[in-house]
Length: 294
Image (tube, rainbow, N blue to C red; front, side, top):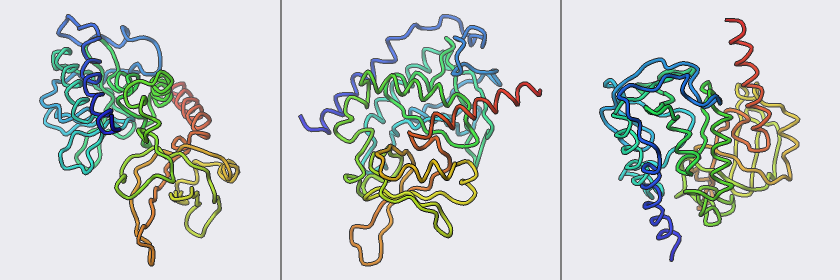
């Protein structure tokens, strides 16, 4: 069976994960107190709302607003994507079933950045109290994609992803076939978009405009503004190490180079696996300090 056929076979599994959960019987959303006390639970439910349309596994129409899950990347179902993202359609169907079992009602928790350019960013909670992003992550049907300033639940999301990876659930059972982690030497222009790239750092240096991290075929840049979040010593120490970096990558053709190369712009240390634990621990500490002052 080819890798493409194997990925297609995951559609059946993806469709099933929605049915293996207990159905909430009340029409009202469960209060926050009913949610298990981990940091994937909402600090507060800012709003309860009706989902009008499920576009795919992470985008919805809620209160006439285009709404997107924050903190995760979910395979998209768009037919315009070439090549389409594995499991996009199946995950969209499964999420639709979850929303249906939630009677269409979800709890909304806003993060630091509530909206941008017409898109509302939220953490969504089902009628039984479950965090939708966590459900997707722990089944291997989403990947952590923390975008500042929205860091709520980031460490919990990472833990959920790690469990799915260890158990080879969902996408993770095809990790050896370049999904969802691809080796840098195998990355080509047709894989632009969100990727987790594994490779050895062959260059780590401070340039005039950016800090530069290069794998053999992929270049990552960190702007001076973003460097405020990084420890320069930690970045230099990455040289020679094999790391995983996650980002939205773009293809850039180089002068005299018909193959070109892939580039990413890093926003925070959480995108680099060897630096992520320290970064998110600091974010949790800062959040606790802010809460204590209120």
